[in-house]
Length: 190
Image 1: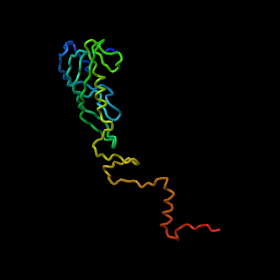
Image 2: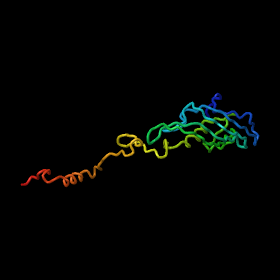
Image 3: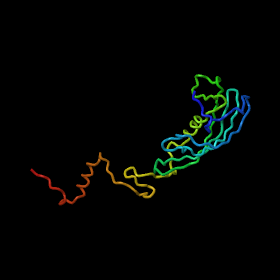
Image 4: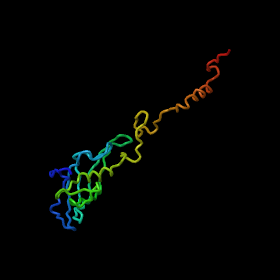
């Protein structure tokens, strides 16, 4: 088990809650977002404000933490590469078991360390899956031309004439048929 940094704003002290089942404590605070809270295309910027609105409840097995996390995400539209910023509002709920009360078979169980809870892994588990897999600046974003990178929003009729290489030989037949007889190359007669 790793040692907790008690100065971290994501380490919560449950001492005042006690270990009586039924006791509860409301916690509201603004904390800086930890590093790497997101994916390559969308993330919560490190150090940006995250608003925590949590309820800590003492239960028989440990402390149940539930509530909401709010903040802002930043990323890039996967179609046009413009910046995308959105509001984040994610619900979370996690049981932190008292030491010795959790099953050794359950690797996903979080334990209290003394009277302290490390909220960062739970925060990460709630926020990252809630982020859009492919963020877009708007639902009807036309994106960029796959051949030249032109912004399709600025030129809706943008197109490239291309011939499938499997049919390229047939284009010579159509050009030969449209040429006048005198413009056609002479066939060699033997």
